[in-house]
Structures are given as C-alpha cells and as structure tokens.
Length: 142
Image 1 (cartoon, rainbow, N blue to C red):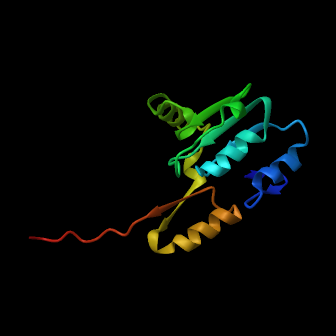
Image 2: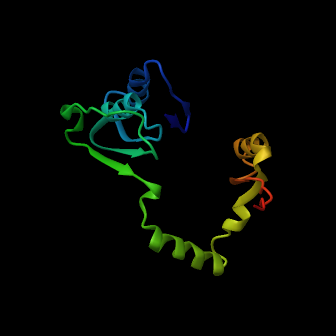
C-alpha cells in the first residue's frame, strides 16, 4: 500500500498498517494489488464505519473473508474507474472539444522498442501517460 508519507509492504503489512492508523484504524483503504493477503490486510485495518476499495483488473487468487472483518464497513469493487464508458468517454471528448480536458497533452507515444524510456519518463513525472506503439510489420503477400 502506498500512502502520502511513503509505502508499506510485506512482511507484517497488517502490523505496519495498524501502527500508522493507531488504535482507531483507517477510515479508508484502497488495494490495487489484487493479492488476497494484501486485500485482507486492508480490510482488517479499517475501522468500524470505514470503507475499503478493491481496484484491480485481475484478482490473484481466492479471497476468503472473515465475516467479522466486514462488520460495519463498506467494501466496493472498482473496475475501470467505476464509470459507464458509453457515457464517460463521450463526456471526456466533449470536454476536449471545449478545450477543458487536454488529454492530448497528457500522453506521449513511444515505440515498443523504447519501453524502458517510457517507464523512466512515467516514473520521473515528465510524461503523465506513456503510450507504447508496436512496430508495424510489412504485410506479406501470399
């Protein structure tokens, strides 16, 4: 889990989270790993009345939850930003046409062969969204 003051990780993730949150527990926890053990740690360290979000494209194993850990908490699975793409994408395009969402300035394309450079640019913050483009192969004639 990443936080505003740094990252936390295995081993003893739950112990680290409890140390950060104090006796009351976290109000909010978000897991983006899809790793069941990390997801359970996020749930267990959340206080009564708190909320947990699971954001992942693929979950990496079966998640078995102790029902006592759920008591008084809100748990939400979040997929693709939790929006309806049929509404959201046209809205983003309207904002772009109006000059209110310059997504074209947020992306930079890189050939696939420059994947390491794309990663460095993203990590440094010089590029918001690197887009990798595979090299096109010439069409073969039969």
